Length: 106
Image (cartoon, rainbow, N blue to C red; front, side, top):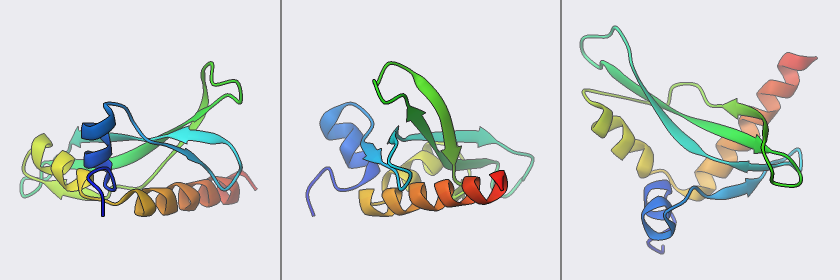
C-alpha cells in the first residue's frame, strides 16, 4: 500500500483532499469534520463530509456525510483516527451516504 492510500496519507502527499466520482456519477471531495460533544469519556467526534461539486467544478452544489465514525479525547486523536482510513473505504462510505440521501429524498 502506497503512502497516499489512506486519507491522512493522501492529504500529506498531495496537500489537497482526494476526489471521487460518486455512485450518482457526481464529483465529490472529502473532508474530516471534528466536533466537541458533551461526552466526558470521549468529548470529540469526527465524521466525513463529502462536498458535491458542480459538473464544471466551479462550486459546491450540495453534500452528503457519514454518521459519527470516530470518538476520542481530543481533536487530534479523532483526526488521526480518521486519517488511517483507506481511500477505498472512503469511497464506499461516500456511496453509502449517497444511497442514504436518496432513500431520505423518497
